[in-house]
Image (cartoon, rainbow over all chains, first blue to last red; front, side, top):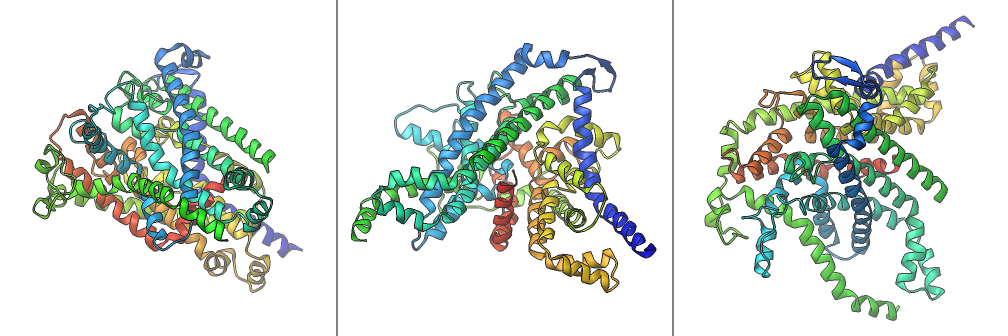
Length: 292
Length: 288
C-alpha cells in the first residue's frame, strides 16, 4: 500500500502546484482587495495610509453625503432604465435577424458591429456623433428644423445620451445570445400552436417567450451587473458632470479615492456597490432556478 | 402555406424598413469612424457637414501623424498593447488550463472550496475593486511596471471554470491510461489533456487576448499619465477626454485613426475565430 499512498500524496501536491499560479493571482487581485476594501471602509484612511477607526461613519455618509446619495440615485436610475430597454431592444433585434434569406449574413454582420468595438473606441466615436457643432446627430436635427442639442454638456440629457450609447453597444451583444436561443426553440411548438389557431402575437407570448425564459433571466442578470458597474463612458465623456448628473457609484468611488485621497469613504462606496451587485445576482439566480 | 406566404409578403415592407433602420443605426458609427480617419481637420470642421467625403478630400495623413505625434506615439503604444495582450493570453492559457485541469481531474483536498471561491469572484466587478487593488499592487512595488499592468488580468476565474467544465467532460479512462503507462501528471496534462482541449484552449486564448488588447482602466490606474507603458485604449481615451475639455489641439481625425487601428485586430480575430468567440460569449451568458 505504500506506493499507492505516495501516489496519492504526489497527486495532491502536483494538483496544488497546478492551481497555485491561477488561484494565487485571483487571491492577490480579487480576494485581498475585497477584504481590504471591507476593512478600510470602517476607517478614516488617507492616501498616505494613515488609518483611524471610523466605525460606521463611512456607511452613514453613503446616504447623508449629497454627492454619494446623488451617485447612488444616478446608478439606480441608470440601471432601471437600461435593463428593460436593453432586453426589449435585444429581443427585437434577435427576432428581426431570425429569418433566412440571401444577404442575411451581411445584415447580421452589420448589426454585430458594436461587439467588435471596444468600450473606449465606442466612447470616442460617440463623442463625435454627439458633437455640438460637427456632430451628425445635430446635423440631422437641424435639417429637420430642430435646434442643436448639447448632448453631453447639459445635465438634463447627458445621462440619457450615455445610456443610448450603452444600449447601442450592448443590445447587439445580447441579441447574439437571444438569437442562438431563438434558433433552439423547437419548430414543432410553433406548428402545434398554429394548428390551435394561435396568431403570431399570441405565439410570441405563449411559445417564444416561455421557451426563452432562462436565457432572458440570464440577459437581465448580466445586463444589470454591467449597468451597476458602469464607469468608462462617464469617466471619459463627462467626468460625472455636468452638475454631477452622470456621477455613478463606480465613478464616485474612483473620484474620492484617487482624486480626494479619501480611501476609507471610497472603500465604503466600493463595498456597497459590490454588495448591491452580489445581492442582485443572487436574487436573479434564485428567480431563474424557480422559473425553470 | 399560401396564407402564410401572403402574410409574410404583406409584412415584408415593414420588416425591411425596420431591418434597414436597425442596420443604419448599428452600422453608422462604424462608418463615421472610418470617415473621420480618412479626412483632415479642415474637412471635419466644414459646415455644412461633409457626409461622404469625395476622393479629393480623402487623405491618410492622420495615420502617419499619429505615429509621429508625441501625444499618440503610435509605434511605441502599439508595441506595448500587443505585448500586454500577448502576455495576458500566454499567462491565462498556462495558468487557467493548469488550474482547470487540477480542479477537474486531480484529487486535491479542499478543491471544492476553491471552485466555490472562484464562482463567487465571478460576481465581483473590477470597478468596485479599483482602489484596493491599486493599493495592493502598489505595495507589491509593481506600480509603473509591465508586470504590474499584466498581473490582475493574468488569470481569469471565468476561464478556469470554463477549462474545468471542459476537462470534466474528458473520460477518466484516458487519464488513468496515462497513469498506468507511468506518465507523471505533467505529462498527462501536456500530452493527453491539452491536445484534447484544443477548442476550449482556443476560446480562452481569444477571450484573454482581447481582454488584454481592450483593457483600459487598469493600465490607466497603475501607470503614470504619460508613461512608457502606455497602451492604445489609454491613449485614445486620454485624447478623447482632451478634445472634450478642449485643453489641447488634438486633431479629430487622429482619434478616429487610432480607434480604427485598435479595431482591426479585433475584427480579424472575430472573422478568423468566430466559433471560439461565440462560444466565449454564450459561455459567459450561461455562467451566471
